[in-house]
Amino acid sequence: MRYLGMAAVVAIVLATAFMLTGKKSAPDVSFTTMEGQNSALQSLRGQVVLVNFWATSCSGCMQEMPDLIKLQKEYGPKGYRTLAIAMSYDIPEYIQNYRSQTDLPFIVSHDKDGSLAKAFGDVALTPTSFLLDKNGKIIKQYVGIPDMAELNRLITDALNG
Image (cartoon, rainbow, N blue to C red; front, side, top):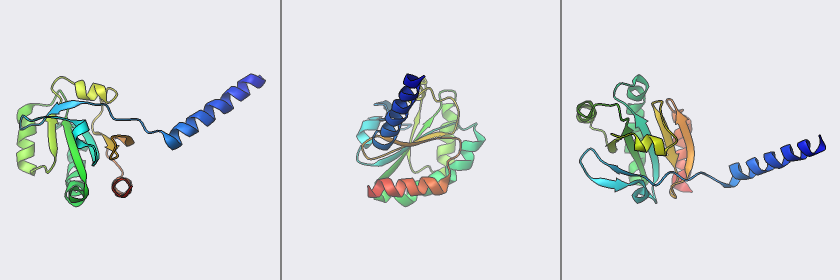
C-alpha cells in the first residue's frame, strides 16, 4: 500500500513537471493549399499559428469563421497565421465557394485523404483547433468553438513571448 502511495506521488510530480515545462510539438505535416501550392507546417515556424480543422457542413465552423477572420486581420501583421484545413469529407467546390464568398484571409487546405487530421491525433469533430507557439509547440487545443477572449489572450501572450 505504501508503494502505491509513493507511485501516485511520483506520477503526479512527473505529470506536473511535464505540464509546466513540456508542450507537445505539432506534427511535421505537409499540405497543399487550395491554390495548389505545396507547403509544410514547419515553414510557418517563427509565427504563432492556429491550425483549424473545419467543414462547410459544420454549423459551429461557420459560426466561428467571422471571429477567426477578425483574429487573422488583427494579429496577422504581428506574426500570426491561420491554417484552415477542410476535412476529407468536404466537397472541394463547396470549399472554393465558401472561400470566394467570405474572402478568407488565411491559408486554406483540403485534407483530401485525411492524413492531416490523423497526424493531429485523429481529429474527427469539427471545429477542432490547435494554437501553436512560434516554435511549433501546441499551446492549446480546442474541440468546438474556442473561447474567443481566452484565444485572444493566448495569441497575444504567444506573440509577445
